[in-house]
Length: 259
Image (cartoon, rainbow, N blue to C red; front, top):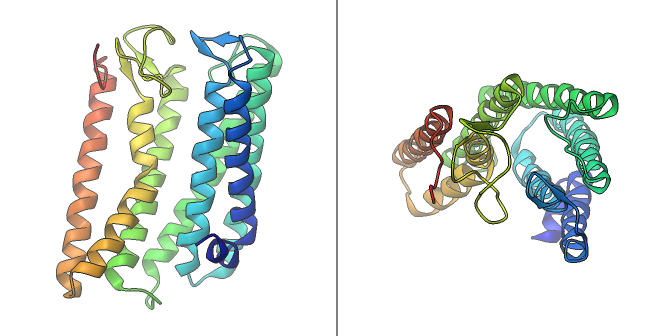
């Protein structure tokens, strides 16, 4: 599979594995670092982002192989690597400085870096939406149509809930009903006291992996194409409603899991 990933997209695969390596190294360093930001070890956030974006880039390597418009895929790959590299660099640098990377208006540098991250993420998400629309318009596929539809819907849900991150920026917090920080779930740090908008953002964006994976197994188990596509739509609708429920919880100041 690793060999196939590099065959499909060397750039995103190489960067993805580098990010996973960075997450591993920071996980070791975290045991020796005593800096705390918002009540947790400063290295936790860069570890999570390097891990998440590494998986994201490897997912792009695999899924975008089925998009016919290779020029668009190349442009999106370059943009994704640039934006994710910039974001992870800012998050890591700010963590080593002992300050926040997101929602940081404490100093000029923090505000500028946070603003640039937002601009670049909107650029990447909009570009992904354009490619997704073109993929929906594609007529021929080298894979089962139900699997192709799951990739299309996975990309669409990913885009929708990527833009949900803009709502967090608008309210200048990921918590609703209380201040950021405090008691949260291990590693994820989702608040167990207040609403946390990161929950919907997380589950929504990882539709990029969940829906295509479900579609792959459906395409293998269900021989009738129309029925298989129906099941893909059903799984996608259930996942979409689940994510909307977590967003509703957060907006109404309810924790995803209370303690």
